[in-house]
Image 1 (cartoon, rainbow, N blue to C red):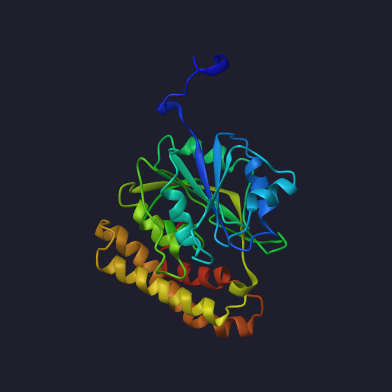
Image 2: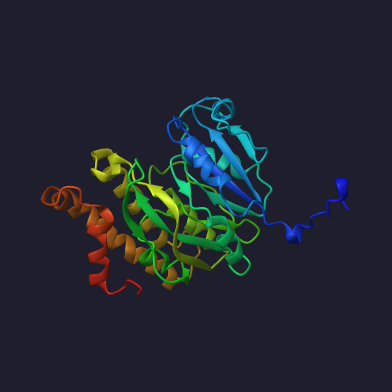
Length: 296
């Protein structure tokens, strides 16, 4: 028995999820984001909040009435080093068996961790459908919704066609680090690293993660489009050269998605001009369907 008669928790019983949240100028959203962790039905979590702006988020949250010992505060070691560097700072520190990504403007729905941890009993990676929203939390669309299903590196993107920050994974079965040299698509690049040692994942088709789509990405800003194209092209190159060590059919499945996605990028500006407010996902999805690779 432990202190005060509390049973010791063995490593096999440990179901703690380390939630990794990089924060840069996140004062307007961080209270809501952290509150979504506090509302989880699965209470065994730690939230690693990594300040990438030198701001005292511990004091800021305390002023908002949030002070929980499960929240850990770190610094990225600089100002504006980027989300990939900040996430890697936490990944070098955490000891919990499970990890999850939560950006500082997104939210977990209350049963996200509960359902993910249950699925992690048999799978090294769990992804969930997304509730894509505006910055005011107005619903735009769902991504990846439908039945629960087992996916792989070659089939994942044909179901979850955009945004890959919703994952929860078992660090004992899959490990990786974020690539700070890439401006975009770092979530997909990281996921492909995990698929090296966890060849399949469980995708939960219930939207369990609120993903905020920034106005800059919705308007296809020049910098966003350029960064997306460059990052997709680099990941495609890595897949085609065997960088991830994936089976050939799995690498080709993801590569085929990226080729279509790059075609969609090239056509998006004109499509957006013709249909103001068109989401990239709504532009891309018919192209995937036409390729005959989308899963039901």
